[in-house]
Structure formats: C-alpha cells, structure tokens
Image (cartoon, rainbow, N blue to C red; front, side, top):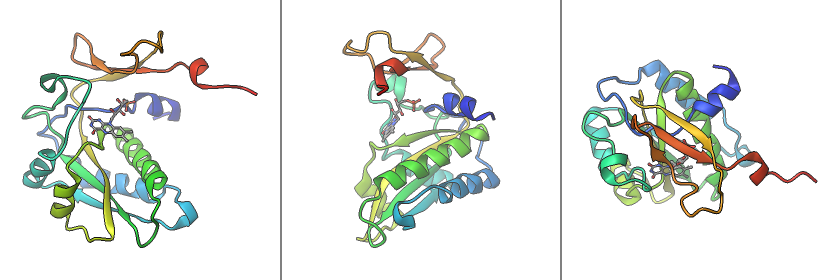
Length: 195
Ligand SMILES: Cc1cc2nc3c(=O)[nH]c(=O)nc-3n(C[C@H](O)[C@H](O)[C@H](O)COP(=O)(O)O)c2cc1C
C-alpha cells in the first residue's frame, strides 16, 4: 500500500472475523517489523509473547478492556468478533529501564505491517497486567507494556476533522449507522506551530 494511505487507514479495529486466522507468514512479518524499529542506544530491550492458540487467545481476551468511550454492548467485541492473535510487548528492565518510546515505535511498526496485509489491530493498555504477566511466565525483571490484538476486521474505521476542539466530547470516537468507527482527529492547524 502507498505509505500515506497505509498511515491514514491503519486505524484501531475492534471487531474481527474470528473464523479467520492470521497466517504464520504474516505473524512473522509483524514480528520482523517490530525487530526493525529504532531503539534508544540500540539496547533493544523488548521481547514479544505470541498467543494464537484459540483457547489461550480467549483467556487473554478475558483480561482486556475495549473502547472505554462506548457502552460495552457497542465497544466490546462479541462472541465471533474477537481477535485471533495477541502479541504481548515485554520490557526487559535489565536491558533498559525506559522502554516506553521503544515500545511505541515497535507497536507502530507491528500494526502497520499487519495492516499492510489487511490485518487490523487494537493496542490494549487497559488490561490486567498482573494476570497476563503470570500467564506469560514473566520474571521479576520483565514488565508487560501492552498487549496488541490482531485479526481480520469486519468493520471500517475512518478519521474526521475535529471542528470544535473545545467541545467536551471532541476526541471521543463513535459508531456511525453502519457500526463503523469514526475517529475524530485534531486539524493540523490546531496542533502545529510554525516559527
Ligand atoms: C497507549 C494506547 C493504549 C490504548 N489502549 C486501548 C485499550 O485498552 N482498549 C481499546 O479499545 N483501545 C485502546 N487504544 C486504542 C485507542 O483508543 C485509539 O488509538 C484511539 O481511539 C484513536 O483511534 P485510532 O487508533 O484509530 O487513531 C489504545 C491506544 C494507545 C495509543
């Protein structure tokens, strides 16, 4: 896909075709993309836990929260709509204690590589990290940064300009009449200052 088009359409997806697995070669490409990401002092402190076994995916799903701006019946994927793959992003503190930017870059690469192959994703910060760390067998030197959900989306998502940035609900995404996500983004003029 052409780069700007890829960036514009790589949105957060929250409903998937649960019957369609992400093929191994695409999973490999997603992980390879994470490996290509820049890293502070090139310390490469991140490692990845891949969960694709349907039973384990269900277990991870149970520890995740979706679409906080929406009522659960609209935002939470239902049975049959759930992701088929989770990748846990793990910070290894013995390599670097400050992994946040590294993690953001790796996750960005992963979600873009996935979307380039038609696989949608949702980064999940709101998850039970204690339970997941236990499930993933993390040591005391390892901290779970995030889990990222993947699958083939069954809805669309598009961005719209925020016309009234001061309105209290200005940044809240919502569903349109087709149950597609609409994601308000601040206009360039509202976020850029030229000196
Ligand atoms: C750090 C971070 C944490 C997030 N955590 C969650 C989450 O726990 N659950 C969820 O449904 N979406 C989560 N998201 C997705 C955001 O809600 C989404 O990026 C935002 O609404 C903008 O939509 P877009 O990604 O399509 O631009 C997270 C995104 C980021 C960057």
